[in-house]
Image (cartoon, rainbow, N blue to C red; front, side, top):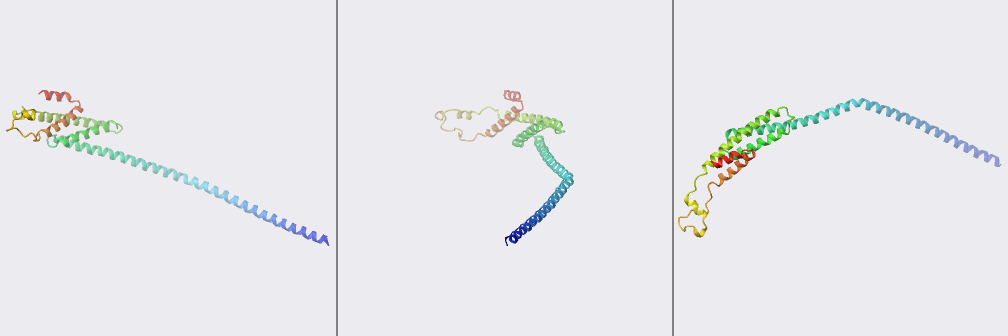
Length: 217
């Protein structure tokens, strides 16, 4: 009776082994199919990447061109602003310093700024012509400023009136009556300040010998 039971156990193991082999075969088949699909997918990706490469190159070139255009426009805008500044300065310089001294001095400073800018940016193809024009204009501006300086200095270089001499005395020695108003504002203080500003600009332009000559006169 023990033999049939043993035979049944062996048959059961054989069936399980057959099922395992079948499962392994199916797993292998699925694995092979997945490997084949992944290989095909990788091939398609490579083909797509190859097809997209010219588009990527064109896109990169377009982006670089766009960046270069932005840089060029910004540089052009800076130069245009400099030309606008030069035109405004030239207009004020042509009018001369007599009507608006502060505006005239500001125009000279703007002109100097433009000269420094174009001197440091010689790559600009018209920089030499612009510099030549700006330097000539600056020379004329300083010449006009020199003339105005002489006129103002001459107008306010008059003998001091006797009554003004009392201001140099101590309070105890001043006359008690008929003395000038000691707290009155000096009418030439504004003009002295203007002369100082003009002198500063002229000195920057190496016209100090002209200033010395004006004082000697």
